[in-house]
Length: 118
Image (cartoon, rainbow, N blue to C red; front, side, top):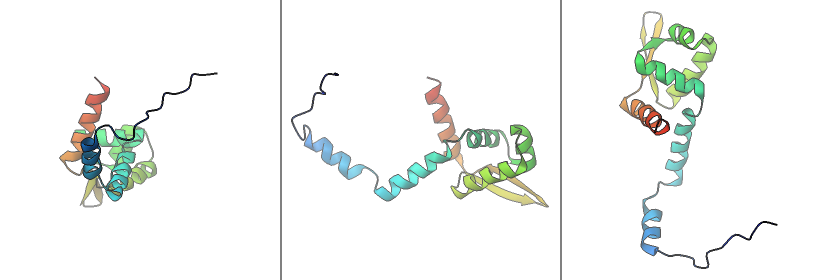
């Protein structure tokens, strides 16, 4: 039988730290939005799309060829990324080009890569 876990007998050790954390942590609404944003980075296909768009603005056809996927699958993932403001699009004639929405997306990608490569 495993040893019993040691249980702390106190309720708070550093009240000022507890108060600061409670007052400064994000609201439930913000926590949910942030968690949904990070879910967009939890899919390997979306990471590859973001990485491809980091290199260059691309259309669905070029993205599909780069990732060896169907246009439909790429379009579905781009819709999700666009819904979360991670990518933006512009139309030139009949072709829609996608790019990263802003430098925050690049920063998130770079920070994640830096973290896993340490």
